[in-house]
Amino acid sequence: MRQRHIFGQVFTLESIIAGVVFLVVLAVFGYALLRRRAGRPVDPSQRSERPRLESYYVGVLGAFAVFLVAWTAWQNHREHQSADRPPVRVDVTGFQWCWTFAYPQATERRSVSGTCRGDDLPTLVVPTGRPVQLKLTSKDVIHSLWVPDLRYKMDAFPHHTNTLTLTLDREGRWMGKCAEFCGHLHYSMHFWIKAVSPEEYDNWLHSGAGQAVAS
Image (cartoon, rainbow, N blue to C red; front, side, top):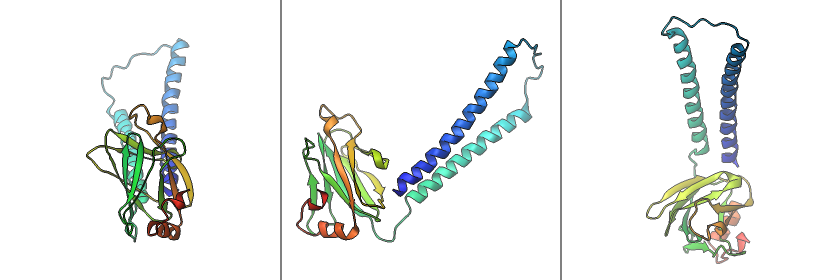
């Protein structure tokens, strides 16, 4: 998935920078500690300020901060680039303790739901290669739509709508969960997200096949 790849790039770079900073601080601390234990006399500085050293320190920190903010913003722009076609819309409603996926763009408004008990899990069907706009809300308490393998997560609040846009570039099926503790059956609040070809998606959306494509 493109978003997953971009997330991996950003996370890897930020982890490397954090690791380098940690090692530098650890090395300086270790040097000071060994020097102290060696008993080498150190005369305290008589200067109350070291403006040149402090300006270098602030400059380096500021450069890292600007770079990370700019890099992250650019990667976020890449992840949410506008598409030529309007996005596919799916209205997602969380409730105790399952999900409903409604497709307002269908010829006859279609929705998919379940009980989230045993094998009765609802499936969020989406096309590959097209942006999919999820409109999330909740009927009762706070839920959170989470697809661990795809790095997607968004909270669903009652009386409020959050929007999450995703694009899947290959067909497949992945397990999704609720990531917000929402009651005693929270642990079973799972669903499937399935990506199919645009042709298969359109046939399913505008036919009477129900959930046939999602099996």
